[in-house]
Length: 335
Ligand SMILES: NC(=O)c1ccc[n+]([C@@H]2O[C@H](COP(=O)([O-])OP(=O)(O)OC[C@H]3O[C@@H](n4cnc5c(N)ncnc54)[C@H](OP(=O)(O)O)[C@@H]3O)[C@@H](O)[C@H]2O)c1
Image 1 (tube, protein in one colour):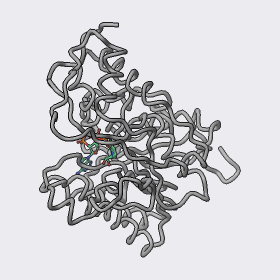
Image 2 (image 1 turned 60 degrees about the horizontal axis):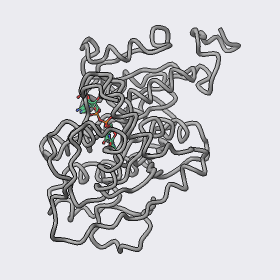
Image 3 (image 1 turned 180 degrees about the vertical axis):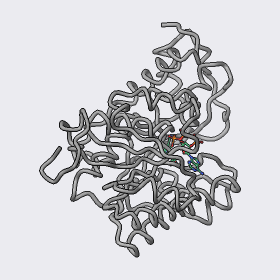
């Protein structure tokens, strides 16, 4: 027990968590599972919201080190204000990571935007000091007016009309959710810090394969016969979880934080995969043999590096992703 009478749970005496209680929404997801794992390792007591705590797909959370003593799974849909309030009770921080990841406007926009508003409202009601919101690069780069020479940084915003016109409902939903979170947090007096990850790769902790890992799986399991003439920024999932905790713990952290290691053309990505894992049917042909090769844009990750984050090279992220898919039997295990 501490001097102020709080009960100290086993394992919570060490690490930066220092006995604090925080909540992670959508705890069973790819990124959220890593946030929960690192928080538990650092001595936090973690409340994780999931839609169905009994579901076996959340067993990996219960099996984590420290989970028995310091993890509580709470049932909450993003549109259920009461359930969110109950989950955030006695929490100093909330990591709002839950979101649909889809381009179906019906499934995306309402839970992403209204759900985020409800999270901020519930956090204010529960007296939470700081909310870390997992936004996306989708809220940053979808702007056709941005010049090729511009270095993408935290000042860039996606153009909502362009997202609508091109039916990029995921990017639209994330951008509107981020804006709504910023406005409401100011209004209700909650500190909000935003992490904008690019495409996230790395080892899966959860039993299912999420959308961003499928981006790599499809080049290895024979389902993609060609690669696109496209560029994409990548980051390791552990770095994304680390970024969330860094911006939560650093009192000076504010605003948005782009979380990216590097931008690659798809050709470079498939080449790296083929180099590491030559036994898989990695495509060698681009689906677009007409247009000039798209040029990778420049992106700044300076803000997170200034907070002390050391980014893992994308080659490691790719390697770890494939090894994890092999370990889970999603890919035949060839060396
Ligand atoms: N992975 C990436 O490359 C990437 C990049 C940038 C940003 N992000 C953002 O990072 C966050 C997590 O993404 P992820 O890749 O980890 O995806 P994920 O594995 O699909 O996780 C999404 C989580 O959100 C939960 N969720 C969805 N709709 C919900 C609702 N209505 N109520 C409650 N929970 C709901 C899901 O719960 P169920 O399991 O019950 O469906 C799941 O736990 C999202 O906000 C996403 O926009 C991801």
